[in-house]
Amino acid sequence: MPRKAAGAHERALGAELRGIREAAVPRLSVTAAAARLGWSKSVLSNLENGKRKTSPEEVAALLALYGVVGRRRDELVERAGRARGPGLWERDLPGLPPETNTLAGYEHEAVRMLCWEPLLVPGLLRTMHYARAFMAADGVDPRDVEPRLMARLRRQQVLRGGVEYVALLGEAALRTGVGGRRVMADQWRHVLETAELPNVRVGVVPSAAVHPGMVGPFLLLEFRVATPVAHVRLQRSAVFLERADATPYVTAAARVEAVALGPAESLRLIAARAEELSHDG
Image 1 (cartoon, helix red, strand yellow):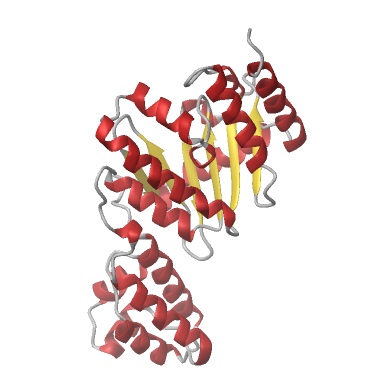
Image 2 (spheres, rainbow, N blue to C red):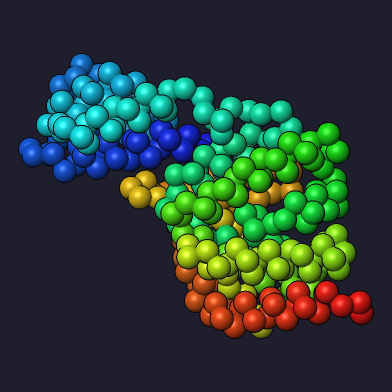
């Protein structure tokens, strides 16, 4: 069964602490390290797997045991302090499903994201008008639309950072009409503008291509130390898959990316569609 997703901050910090323990000389097992600190094995195991919040004091004790000093020690202790408080994306916010907050936390921690959408515009590339029109078609409570739009706008700021974002969309998505011709023309122009960012790459997957992504959309998030997480949407919720559960999506992502058209040809198709929609037909 898929596991409940760990918090993004806890998961990233735990993975780094596990890596430090495994690299320590002499190397310490979870059991040995926990015993040296007077902890149970489950406490340290849960900490390393991001399943429990930790404290600056606990992290300082671990780093002392592992012989970590100086700037790296200070950075990790400071990160433990940040993780204890509920950040904006660690709280359940009005109008937003809990998985939105979890997703945004993972997006903030990721170093690479690959989003595959066979029929829709990838989430972080959607304009407000497109997103609003799709929410209406999807039956979102009108009271929740504005909070979700504002949350999406805030999430999109992650693209202005260093994360590598690969947006793959099905050729059929170019022919969808969410919100009408004007909304779609503006949407495709926005995709073209965002694709100019050095960390953003957009690819169109031909309808004739056969690949595992034909099963449905997904988002694969990769991290500096922690293992990848797959985000898979359901009709009214979403699941986050880790470790062995995420492995099929790692494979699927590579195969979908392999059959996508190159950036130049993909952007040419998108530009042609935007131009076509800009004229009354």
